[in-house]
Figure 1 (cartoon, rainbow, N blue to C red):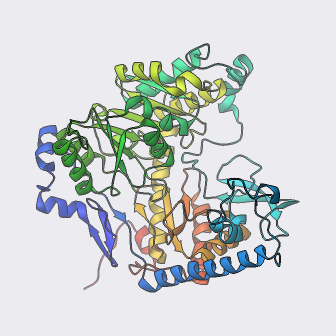
Figure 2: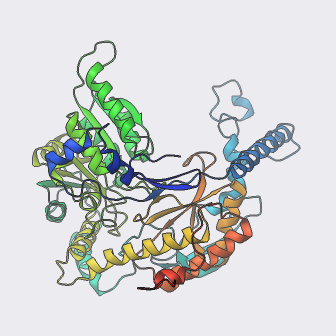
Figure 3: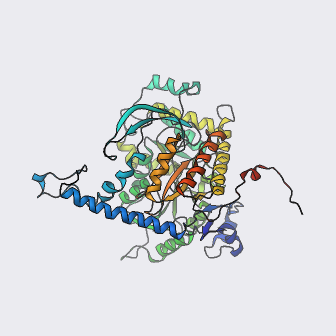
Length: 548
């Protein structure tokens, strides 16, 4: 599996493709010329990203497992149709058998026969703040996960490795949240109107000014829902006669927004600059199908950090292509804002880019800021246009005032406007925790995806049975993890997704790593053929000498 332009692992061999790009001067994409014109010394930021392929026998057993599960699924469906086995799934009523069916049996096949077997690993009810430790309500099933019942027992102090609480700002109430409490008492919870009508508060204006200052752009607009920030604003930016070039691993909100826009959509391979440039070149040369007229707009959609892969967009190279072919660039920083960059300002800061090089900044407040909602930022004329044309501004209820105050409080904390450096320390602690956690997992022999500085850490499990066993065993050890499978990932690439937080102590991470080491041996999921030293203490030395 290849990750052009960055580090990749192919057939068990680590390759840093950024260095490779230096040696060949990247003349194929015309990048050197763009870099010289921009005068950007950080254009080729060294990036190490690993996407190691699984051994052949692992993939064989994975597909074999799905094959056996499918055969037994058809057998059980046969037994259900003949009434030998009770069917708990939704079915058509007998008197409606001549109507157009509401439930297609084949469409629900995966849910009935595969997902239900391991359904207990999702939607676990939490009964505390999503801090580094949280409490889980215990539940059991008496009918093979079709229904659940609560036992009344609370599993206390589970280490939280699944929440997007990157900076640890989603926490229990303390005195630092007093301003949020004051806003709640003054404004109440709801707004009861849209931004176009009577739903624009002074708190919204204060937050928008702060977001613009944080990102060093001209203006910003905030919305009450992160998902809708993408899906309801992209249709306002492009439409029929426009072309969207979308990364194949973009989030569902970006995909939905692109589809709703009515624009033509073409997909380029993940983080593959050759694939993106070919689409851009063809779009400029051939124009629209049939008429061959020039596209009204060409919009490139990418994410800062990809939430399932843990990879970081190759922003500097994308900007160079965008300038070369006169396209527009839309960057979704839902997972990267607050979590990468020297001061937490996302991939723009990570690559030391000029904010004017990015046409549309998008981000959410649900991850690093411990709140909800999202923003669009950039040039003032862009934001003014969206204030008038955004579906979210016209039809959706405005952001709750206490939520707006929480984001203001968190953003000031990160920026140091609270008079302390604790926010910056959290950003640095997150980076340190991320590097430590990823390094130790690699040394243990797990296949992990993504960039070495991404706090989203996918650990590949592949086989569906091991996905279930992995999550269940870790919960018994009081470790809460998120496991992900098809259709959120490719069928044969099921994984556990860890989210590292600045609030995690070294003791917590070591406890998780110890449990993972044992679990990896128990379930035989240490698939990597690039296992490093089994003595991590060697890397803790500040200096050491080699003997002759």
